[in-house]
Length: 61
Image (cartoon, rainbow, N blue to C red; front, top):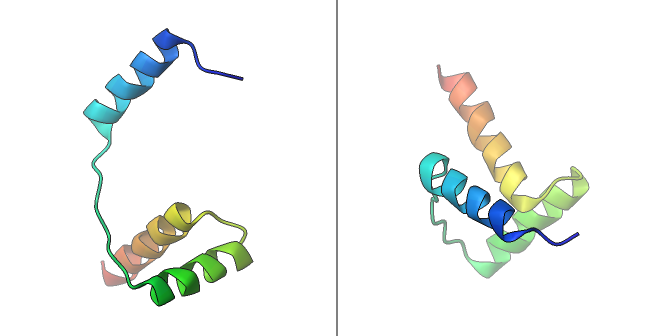
């Protein structure tokens, strides 16, 4: 289902207010390793990386 213009505008406003992008450059081979691990865990790459960060932050507190 396509988003309405109002939904697109609301999503954009939310992202501007609440989301901070973090560029991450990795070598292609490393990306493929991460993607394979994420696929094996049944997750998207973005969620897999976020979860790894959360787990490390928890351990180091």
